[in-house]
Image (cartoon, rainbow over all chains, first blue to last red; front, side, top):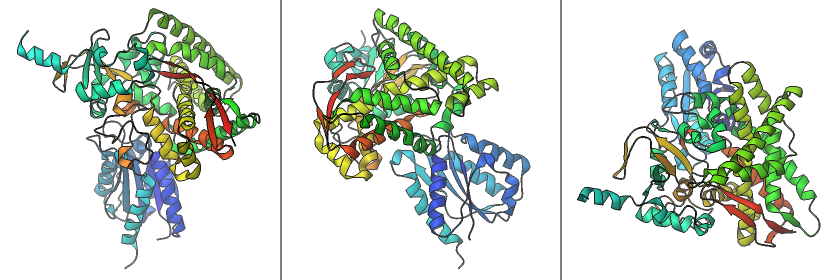
Length: 151
Length: 403
């Protein structure tokens, strides 16, 4: 696994920051991990990918953040066959809301409905925890990458 | 009077019994007053204000974020500040999100890292101008740094910091729970000046296009995504708001460092503590300790019936010292556990301050630039401060910086 695209969907830029920090950490491990905003990404390109990582927040009452909306709509409309795709997903949320991390759950469902396979558990950052989102995400991604390593 | 009514009355005293809005002692140091309200009467009734006052952190987080609790009606009653009805802070959904998204990408963590490079340059230039005696007014420094930073973001001239400060001092007192007639007049006068300046900025930008925030707002207006009034109100808000919050917190922090030199030493000694020290400062001394909302349905809050159409006065400053959330809430303790550092100074929910990261980074960078040259901050005369129950201001903060 020497190239894994990281797609982020963000409202305030925190998911972008986490995606950048993941990319830097993965780069140190020898993985080329380009960071692309979901709003600049064509869902057609998903079919040529082996593994991708999603980083996405939640906005308002459980909605997707601004830059994830067109990506999600394209998945729903184009319905690409994603049987060959594996993905890992990390969400940024706030557990003081009932809709905690619904955004990432929405995208995970959308991808698995199209045949993609999730690697590991969805990672979650809770804004109410006071913990650093990037540090948490880097720990999470190392666990996930261990699952993708050849046996 | 029935028993039930007696019980309700006992559970909900008149606000001014606990929070005497116009008492100078309350305005100077509201925290002992907040503490008593938190302990004895977390829901207060304010008939003059046609509403209720909430102090508990938990209540602010819940009722302050209910979709039925609205913001727009509040700006109708805010005198000259009704201009903000045309920006994100003046709207409920869906227009709130539409307008907020016009500016969100300008205040992301990545962008903020970029903006505070400029903050550091401005701070260094101003510090270069301090003489060998180290004398400087901390509040002047704070205002000029924050003003010039946001002007860099907007890409407009940044020389009018003193005039904008003067107008903001006139405009803010109206937000008190007990505004006086002259506060309305002063706010009209202050906002008239700020509106004139905003119109000048827009004319300047039309004549000198670039790629700043104001260019993006004007492009959105030209594309029909924002009305002219929305562009105007959004520009005015971002142009002036740093004078209130980021600037006050820089002054408050410098003042604190002068009283507690060991905190400045801790800041100098440990770069990894910089963010935590700023975060604790933000919790400790909210520049605007209250926001207001309007209920649109009947609510029962801790057994108190709150009818639709009531104002909710959400005491951010009180919630920041709620002992159910913060151990030793009146201690300045920047080593609190991470999960016990979340304060409400920059408001909460969807209307949480979009410039929060920029404000916190400006504060941190200003302290860092000072700490790079100086080891001690001395207060050389009592600062001149003006406080209402709703906003806090340094008029002077005479300091001597020691190498």
